[in-house]
Image (cartoon, rainbow, N blue to C red; front, top):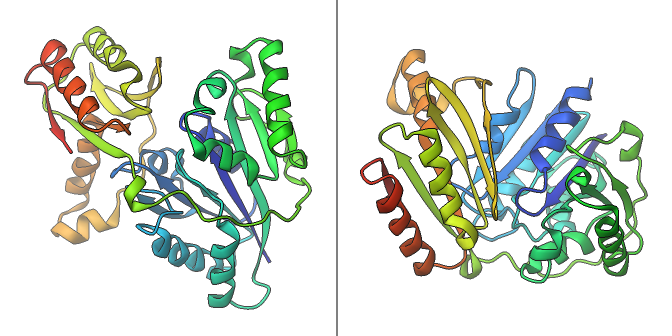
Amino acid sequence: MTAIYLITGFLGSGKTTFLKRRLEMTTVRTGVLVNDFGKINFDGLQIQHDGLEMVELSNGSIFCSCLKDSFIDGLVHLVDLELDQIFIESSGLADPSDMGKILDVVRLRTKPNSFNFNGTICLIDCLFFPKVLPKMLAVERQIRHSHLIILNKLDLVEPAQVKIIRNTIGQMNPLAAVIETSYGFINSQHLAFEIFPIEDEESTNKITTRNKNLILHFLHEPEEQVLREFLTALGSHFFRIKGLIQLNNQTFKIDQVNDQLQMNRYDARPAIDPSLIAAAELDPHAGAESWNAKNNQLVCLTSQGLESISHLSTQIERFIPGYCRLEM
């Protein structure tokens, strides 16, 4: 029987890092369904490796009607492979309140007793949790609909703040197990947490409430310091900025949440996507070039509409005029 885990957590909480650690430690047949808010699934690029069965769903939430059917189809496909375990990594803005109903549909479309839902794991970014909880209903929903809650990034906060977060979470979901860690690390035995019934609610992820994705296509290589200043200037206008950029013949992974910017070298090279080759009738080398094109794009997520677009355009003209093209 296949064990299914759902991984939730707000933008930048460490879901992909946590998942990568689980995959590095596993010795059984594993499938992953990765959901990214952008048109390009950068999280999927980070965890691809040989022998891993993967389904990638982008440009929305799997709990929104825009992707829910594809989510069910992808999950049915993975269950039919009779794997040992499946991890679902939802997008940071996902509201998993109706996960039970989705699983009911999957059960109708798969063999009897082919899978068991082993629970929802929610990661918390302890540094930004106090700021995002009052603003984002999805964060509250993620906590209330989880069985295991991981307080991540403890290395960035004081013990007093962790105590406050624990108390807040305890009031919202007193039955969930809570683990404290950094860098998304937990021991395998922590996955044997208690499963308790959680009543479904209607998900707040809807087409009418979708956030805006803006994509920056870099036409020329910027200077690293100028790029840092540009991203810093974007500030609180965007929930999340992430992507891959080539600087000085190196690929860098950009990951910015609020005012915290991370730029780290990214050396992993995923397998060439066969669909790229088939769609354009290209050879493998051309497929590799298509992947390299992704090394010069950033996805910016916002809920502020024209205000954020105007701010982004202003900062482009200020720091990197002529260096990129904005796609909305």
